Length: 485
Ligand code: NAP
Image (cartoon, rainbow, N blue to C red; front, side, top):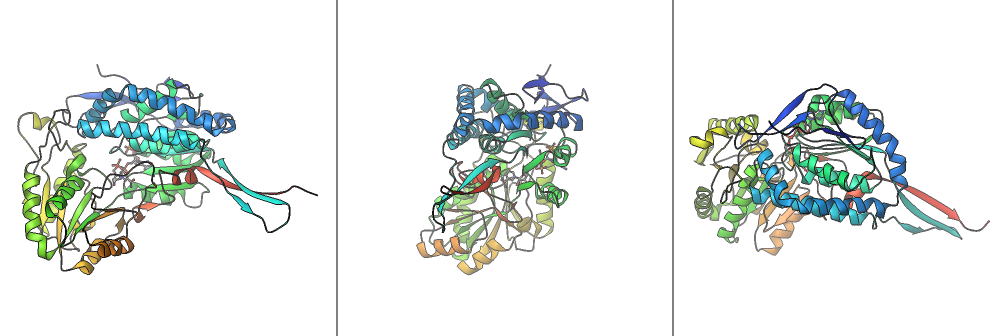
């Protein structure tokens, strides 16, 4: 019998009022139910909001460094269980074990970083133009905040929202993605064991349309941080219009890597393989377009194909696997649908393109890493997010043409360039329309201590992570104090 996981409301583990559960399935081996989770609804969300609203004044009154101590304790608990949590993540999401353990480690680092922010949440002291007047700002919490997270980084994303929200003095209501709710559950459990006061943190599982919607509609909601698809993010944006709720949306990408003529082509091929195919291409920052200067195109493509053909697809728990499965049958179908669309639009399939089948593969959602050549900007494969291991190759006549191709999409999450030409690199940094810019690195691979977020249709609102995160989760108050009468 699979393990039953409960909601966490007001410091207690409780069943959903509906009495129903839903299964969390291993995408590499669909016979395995990783756990049963609560299929919650509006009543559960209201109970969590009541608890969070009651707990908020007491939590806000606790000095911020002491709020941070709960995160330090939770980080220690998580660290002692890192191997087990990594394995669970591979089972629920499909990414390889080294990737999963790396993500748990990242969540631990995030807890430690924001634990420290409790003692570093700086405000400003600014000179007044009047005599004997002392002016400064204060940071105040917002109240109850709602966090809605996706399945692809099931530990890191909940961690990078929860930790600054808590240390900022807010109480939290988190709804993880239904495809991978266990990793966020483990974060919540670590904070419970660290002794976080009842009601400060609440975790509820269930569908986006039910739990997600009930969070949005609750009158006590003061801020909403969402990471997920543009489709859902844009719906939430419209629903929140006119309400005085702070909102942060992190959404999709169509991220380019530009390779210039002077690049080390072996190095560039490694960067493309890493950016496009690791984590099965299921990263918002994954590279899905390689824009290559014409003079080096043929040679680079040859190297890229050699490296891609060596990648091993399989169950991420097994050693030596490079690419795990798609997260579910819907994502696999989306990947295959875009491959079909690309073929029909005239792109040339260089490798991959099919589901990996036979034997144990039949129990999972495995797909070959796929490369298309001859992709032109008007094709859907050049414009739309696939969210799978599918890379579109585009030829640029020169640097200006590469910039035109790189910027001709509605998205603007991440972008990279491979070049040793310092002038070109700086021109790229100035002209590229992306929130995250990397040089001689893959488009993916962000660190928790720097701000993160995109531009154009990829993001809306303030940045996440690093010192910027606390700006979203706190409000500035301005004080003018005349110390004589
Ligand atoms: P999704 O389908 O948009 O779901 C994201 C979250 O929203 C889930 O918890 C989902 O719940 C919930 N949700 C769905 N419908 C909702 C509604 N009507 N009201 C409120 N909540 C609702 O995205 P996903 O498939 O989980 O994640 C993949 C997407 O996330 C990709 O587009 C990727 O690029 C993006 N992403 C962006 C970033 C970034 O930082 N920019 C990072 C990672 C991923 P259910 O799971 O219950 O449906």
